Amino acid sequence: MRRFLPQTLPVWVLLIVIAGLLISQVATLYIVSRDRAAANDVVDLYRLNDRAFSLVQLMHDATPEERKATASGLFNATYALTVSDTPAVTSSIAGDDELAELEDILVGRLSKFGITDARVRRDPATQEADAPGGMVPNKDVGQVERDLLVLAADFAQSDKLTASLRFADGQWLNFTEPITPVGPILSFDSLPLYSLIAGLVVAMSIWSLRRLTAPYRMMETAVKRIGNDLKSPPIAETGSREIRAAAKAINAMQSRLRDYVEDREHLAAALAHDLRTPLTRMRLRLELLRKSPAREALAHDLADIESIASSVIDFAKFEVTEEKAERIDFWSLVEAIADGFEEVSFDHDDTRPRGMICIARPVALKRCVTNLVQNAVTYGKKAHLSLQRSEHTVTLFIRDEGPGIPQAQLDAVFGSFVRIEQSRNRQTGGLGLGLTIARNIARAAGGEISLSNHPEGGLLTELRLPLAA
Image (cartoon, rainbow, N blue to C red; front, side, top):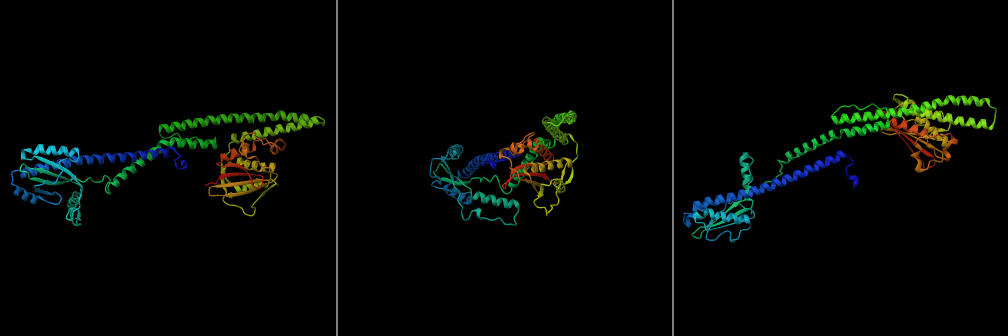
């Protein structure tokens, strides 16, 4: 279930905004619908009250026969009107409190015209054959007439209020008043407007979120770039005050980190370099000694110290040395390095891939590939190389014939001065900096190095680099 949920803050905020918009729209439409229904109810009661007053005022002085003639002349399908000796509303108990109050109002208002009783009820809509609801507006009529015909059809098909008023002589005046039909809140005419407003709100929300989250995206991009290359150019300090403040803080952090790293790299390089002078003097003095077991042991120790000093210098030079990135034919680079090792062979030597152009620091990338190949030859006896090109990356596969590395230590060997015992010990000349330097170079070029144990035996090293655009 969680995999279907948004994974980023802007999407979450956008979903919340859209959900809030939908809820507010639905709530607004519901409130408007209730208010319209309540207003229509009051208007319907007012219209019935007004019509009752007009009819009673017209008929109260007439004879029973004159009342019937008048009612017959005013009768129509929508506004039925009859005068009879029995009421159309037979029940003297109102259906609800509103109707009961309306009945009291009618009796009190019309008592001066001889009305002694009033009854009102609500009747459901009935579709009669001759009702205006069956009329179809002619295409040639004007817009006003068309609207009137449609409204008449709606009134004919709406619920009714039926009222019965008793005169002093016992005769009943019965008439109906159609309840005003409540039109839909959403229609084909109003839906485009609602959709346009909702679309504008969503578009403004997306634009606002992109503006608000710009510092976070900038920080994410900057931190990734600094992690890959500490010497990457600083971020432009432009935009809003928050964006400028974030960019300024990131640039300051990068500058302090670069100074911190360079100070220690220079220190390590200087120490390793200064060690060479006393080591050289010690080697010269050893040459003056006669051959003895102690002399050979000291010579071996001096060689180890010189190896350590050289490795530390190389490790420090990776960041200290200034070198510009260039377009490099990766196949030619790998082929040139492989020619220097007799134990290296290509799995598919008969086919040469094309278009493997990368952008990297030439000397550094050569050092990276050399370290990987040399590791495979040193610890795996033989190295088998193959290259594979995809849409955006090129991958160098290096498989050796050694014992491999325990699964739990595949990532640990990339640490500085980390060596695996037995096959990767000091007896084989390893110091634990080769893979560290190689991964740092690969990441600075936007690539990555990964290790895995090959199913057929040996260690499989994968160097992935992005292709040049």
